[in-house]
Amino acid sequence: MKNKTKIGIVGTGFIAKGLVYALDNQDDLYVSKILTRRVKSEVNDTFPHNKLTNSINELIENSDIVVECSGDVIHGTDVIDKVMTSSIPVVTMNAELQVTTGSYFAKKGFITEAEGDQPGCLAAFRENVIQMGFEPIVFGNIKGFLNLNPSIEDMMYWSNKKGISLQMVTSFTDGTKVQIEQTLVANGLNSTIAQKGLTGMTVSNVEVGGQELARLAEEMNTSISDYILCPGGPPGVFITAKHKKNQQQALSYLKMGDGPFYTMTAPFHLCHLEIVKTIRRVINGGNILLNNSSSPTVSVAAIAKRDLSPGEAIDKGIGSFKVRGEAVRIIQEPSHIPIGLLSNAVITKYIKAGEIITFSDVDIHETLATKIWLDIAREQSGKLLGI
Image (tube, rainbow, N blue to C red):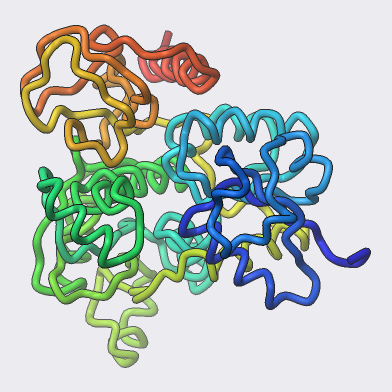
């Protein structure tokens, strides 16, 4: 074990389980500790119980790199804050955390999103595309189906069928996850969004979607982060880009079309299996693949799925049947509460379906994550307003 890099893992869910299996096959990496909040004896036998710990300090003492994949913004923020105090680099597959508190950590130490989920895959794809001389103007996510307000019965069915948590399958289905993913991409790749909630246009194929979004990006004179609904499309990502005119004939010959926009697709993302690539990137001294940047311009607001009344509780916003997330520009919605902060919250005012929930609409616990976001929001609103 002396020559192996010690990998600490935060979380015991779907991604963590897959990563434990993936690291078992590596000669130079091994799982040192796995941080869980559950009683260790109650954790699935998939996880080696001798490596489970409830102690953040024990995780830190036994890790060269920490991979945060708990999916929990509040808990993950507390853990990463302590990990970074010990100058340990952090790899995340927790876009929810990145878009809420990630910008604070981007200033504090080394934090990068991993390949595997769509944001990390788009960041790696972008590096490849740029090396070929392209200028990306659309960073796209491909979805086959969304239902902004699914029933709990449907979500329980799919949760059991797919073997993932009810919260996860709900956040995928109601669009919250893709809004979070593309917000991270917008902030981390110096891009923006075309509109509140993204465009999410329905298209017959990825090429059509890429062309439509590219024309929109050209009108805005900036690159954009968005998604398309493409039933039957691949479960991956795409980039639409421009190239120099002197390459037009060659690109046409190479079956890329006549330009001026060229769409390239990465037709898969393999979650935990690709985290290993990012771990090696860190070990080899590579730069940050993707984080939320130190100056974000986009956030993910909580939107009421139905009318909400004072006294209603929201245990957790992401994956809730009461709220969903939508990408918004911070300067346009400075009072919104990020959906990642809605944890053990109580509604204090009447809120109509479709309305953005603000801090004045809820009572929430004071947490490090909340404090961090309020500091970020004040700083970014001031910068964007030129104050």
